[in-house]
Length: 391
Picture 1 (spheres, rainbow, N blue to C red):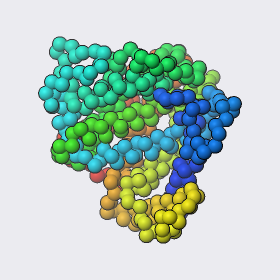
Picture 2 (tube, rainbow, N blue to C red):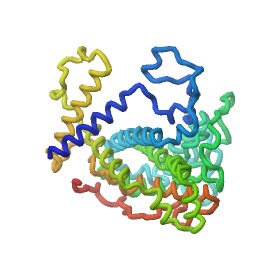
Picture 3 (cartoon, one colour):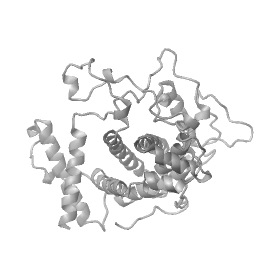
Picture 4 (cartoon, rainbow, N blue to C red):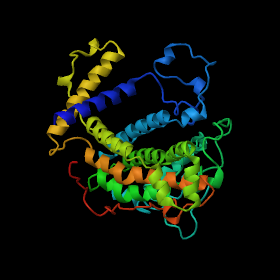
């Protein structure tokens, strides 16, 4: 128990300290978002100082470095976990996923395509998601190489009039075989509805239908961004050993490609970190454990980080001691399971698909964007919310 506690303590302190650091994720600040370019952006700390526009810009090689990728993936973990916590507060609300559950809604204003004769009416989730994507398309979200829509056929041809085109680093992802454009959101949405939603939400209907689909969309977008970031991971791995990846692809050895790109040690670390973060973010902070008694005594960021770390560690200790009596907002074991059985396998499928296309060949059929190569996820839509045993 002492070993587990010390391990969790170090992980939590490191995680919180890194999040409070004034250094900003190089990838997120590189212009790959759908907002202003890096010279117009700054961290909270750097806003106080004059921005040096003459500083050397971030290079592609920096964006694809292991440090940059690791930083991006860690931040995406937090986005996903918070979004899962937000969705878990609502009931399953099956009606929002049912075609025509609220009648024939048509298509949202601004959608490019209309429903064809014979097509079923949109579900409430589909309707709101399409409307959201139409709006986001207008402000250039889907010109970013790490953003992919769930309903591309409904999107307008370009951004709102007057918005300039964004310039992204060239040769970041390979255009060979359309590798940079393959979209895995179809299978992601399918598994989300069949497995993720029943896993994190209780059965029943609480009539919070609008809030439910907005929480769904936030979580879906975060999961999509995480899965498709596998292309950047794959490009980085390809550049580290292009000859070996080319040899395996030429031989049609998808299993060999999967084995070469897999790092079991890193995956185990991701699973452990996701579970710890879920147990920390999903609980109220233990205020009695804070080393600072009064809020006005938190005079600088160092003290604030220390206080937050102490509270998080104390909360994690309580989670360990009461592992059989979970009382948080979302079960950490379920978050870990989502990563282990869904997020990581789907991301690796994206990587294999990208690497085959990158090397000039179509991927095997089991790695097509409309399926998972190793689909072990049951359809839980008719079951009660699952409860996973503690690991």
